[in-house]
Image (cartoon, rainbow, N blue to C red; front, side):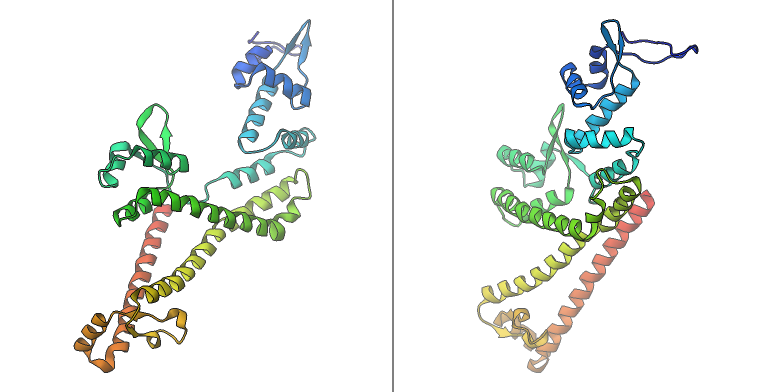
Length: 324
C-alpha cells in the first residue's frame, strides 16, 4: 500500500508504506526493519486494522541509520544519537563532526588507469600477481563493470612504486615494503590520535552525545589539526633521512677523505667522498680550496632544491585557489 493519504480535514498527499514497501524504498530488509523496531530505533508505526503503516519519517530514519552505520557507528551509539534528536538536542553538530572526520585527509585527487597503461609504467611487464597484490593493498581499486580499468586512490603512491621499480627494485619487494611501512605509519597515526584525544578532545567526550556547540567546536579543531600529523611526520622523516643517509653513505664508501669540517663537528653529519672525486676537485681548485668548494657546491644544491620545493608548493596552492 504505497500511495496518497489524508490527515485531519485538509487533503494532503503523503507517502504511506507497508513494511515490504518500506524495505524496498529504504534498501533494508523486512527482518532488519523489525529488528530496529524492537531496539527502539524506529518510531512506532500507525496501526490500521491488522496492518502497520509506515511513513516518510520511518524512511528518513532508516536512511539516517544506514548512513551512521556506514560511518562506523554501532547500533547502541546510533540509538543514543537518535534519542538526542528526538529530545530536541539535534544531530546537526554531531553529524558535522562526523563528516569532518570522514572527510579527505589529503589534497591528492584519485585517478584512473587501464591495465595496459599500468603495464607500460612498469616496463611492459604483465604481472597479474603484482596487480592482485596492489588491489589487496588498496593501491589499485577495481572499477565495477570495467575489468581492465582501476581507480588509483593515491597517484603519488603509485608513482613511488614506478620509480622504485625503474631503479631496479622487484615488485614483490615493493609490496612487502609497503606492508611493513603501513604497520609503522598506522602506529604513528594511532599515537597521534591518542595524544590529541587526551589533550584536546577529551573535554568534548563527556557528553553522550556532545552538544551542538561542542560538536561544532570539535569539528573546527579537526580542520585545524588535520594537517599537523603529516607536517610533523614530514619534518621528522626529513631529519631522520638526513641523519641515516649520511651514515649509510659513510659506511658504504668505506674509505676516503673526511669532509666533516665542511658541515659540522657532529660525526653523524660527516661525509666521506671517494678519492677520485677529491683528486678531481683538487685539480680543479687546488688542495687548499677543496673544503670550501664542496661546501659552496652543497649549499647551492640545497638552495636549488629548496626553491624547487617552494615553487612546487606555490603552484599547488594556486591550483587549489583556482579550484576554490
